[in-house]
Image (cartoon, rainbow, N blue to C red; front, side, top):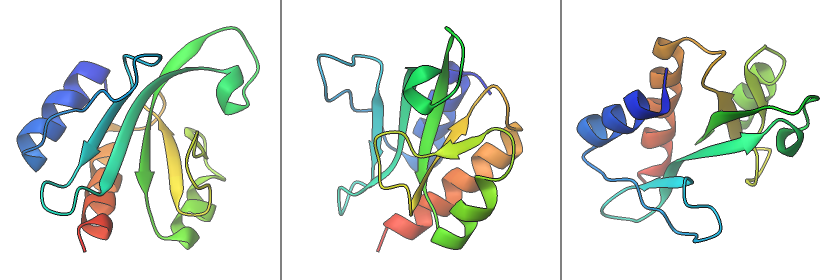
Length: 117
C-alpha cells in the first residue's frame, strides 16, 4: 500500500484529515478521532536505522495501537516492528511496503476502534 493510497483511504473511511504537527518532520501525518482527539494512527517516513534495521534506505511506516498480545505476536512476523516513537507495548509499526493492504486496513480499523472510547 502506498502512502498516497493510505492517506486517501484513511480520509474517506474515517472522515478525518492528516495533521502535520512538526515542522522538523513535515511528512509525519497524525490521525485522530474528531470527538476525543485521541490518535489512532501516525504515518511516518523513517530511515531503516531509525527503526533498528540495517542499510541506508528509508520507508513509510504506519504506527497503530493494538492489544499488547497482538503487538507481541505480530512483532515476530516480517513487516512488523516495535513502534517507532510510541509506546512499544501497545503500539506497532507496520512497514507499508512489506504488509498486504488488507492487513494494513484491518489493523488500522482495530486501532480506530480501540482508541475511540
